[in-house]
Length: 157
Image 1 (cartoon, helix red, strand yellow):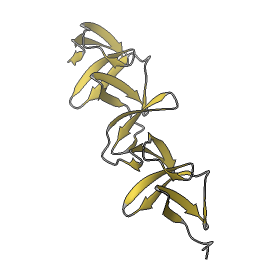
Image 2 (image 1 turned 90 degrees about the vertical axis):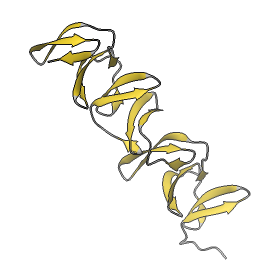
Image 3 (image 1 turned 90 degrees about the horizontal axis):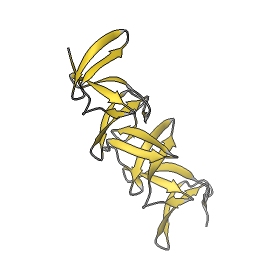
């Protein structure tokens, strides 16, 4: 007997399927909480190999191994854009983020590969050139109408 009001996960033939209103929703791309874990549903079933972003209730969450990783911090490439992840979701902030050995400039949650600016991170200010910290730069940089001395990428006040 089919329960046409049922919504949830159902294991069948080795896969976990997303059932909505009693039938598998093959078009579903969403998150679903089951046994305390937020699972990524893609094409109607849990996608255990997924490493992506998924928008749910207005927030973009980082998915790895088919589930939301709430402890994730770093970068995730999605639709050709590198997004900044903090505590498992996209953080629309301005900051620096170390990824694969390089410190990148994050502008409103996205790596800005063309920006030259100064950015505060922790207690220090850093020179950014073409989207990454300019560790090899020593000289001066104008920022917001003031001239700052930079030594190996760090602003010296």
